[in-house]
Image (tube, rainbow, N blue to C red; front, side):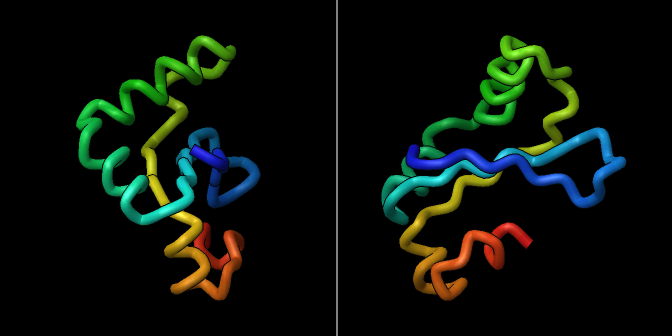
Length: 80
């Protein structure tokens, strides 16, 4: 994993999605495919760091390779 982003649609929104960034599509597919409990794991990590576990609504795994290819290299565009 090379980056972690937290995305919420509105400032007053209480929940967020976590985006995990990998370097390659292969790494992305391996992480996403081999971890059916990824959301539960991320919620546990969030809780250990003082967040309410249920405030994490979902997890997306994205690669820098895809961002470069499909979003002109912009994580801003990819996260929208």
